[in-house]
Image 1 (cartoon, one colour):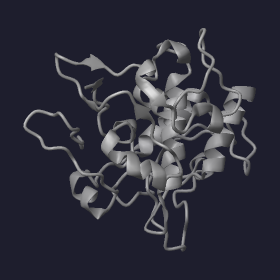
Image 2 (cartoon, rainbow, N blue to C red):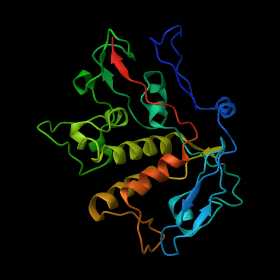
Image 3 (cartoon, rainbow, N blue to C red):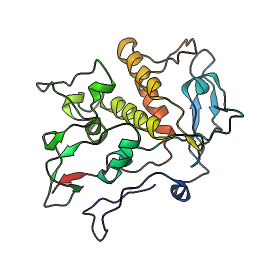
Length: 251
């Protein structure tokens, strides 16, 4: 597991903005192998997913996984990338990679650092510019409670159990996974590291789940569509780099 240090970590200098490259590969266990239960038109049999990303994660499109196709892009010379986790995307030193992904990192009232006992945790009101908002990507979503303004995609990645997402057990975990998938889809677009979803497919996941209560890829007819929790498990199960989400505070 990789932990990216933030400015303010003890005995650690500030990290320079970084991009994802082959240097990350050495820190990931390339021997990982995940098991998924088949979902869709076929029987729910346990199957081993052999498609691997560049860094060793299980990596397939939803239609390939549901149909049991273990090779998402046969013969194309494309290497699948499972993407980066919430712990990567929340960190301020990775804000340049939001731009590459087609997003905008939020701005804050003060510097954002790893928490110490003398600092207060970053709150929603500390965000002075929301950057890319949830409403601009996942249309139809509105925050719960009295606040009805724009909400940063960063906020749900950092604090999915906030009351505006319904608290623990609310919709925050789904929005967090979809937000990371949306960023990964924008960031990993080369043949050497290609995310198995497009941004349009990520948005379609949201539309289907929010309007129908289940998700089925457009190319398939599903007898048992994926639930929100299954979509979350699918996205989280692919991460190449699963960094922990640090407690972030304002300095």
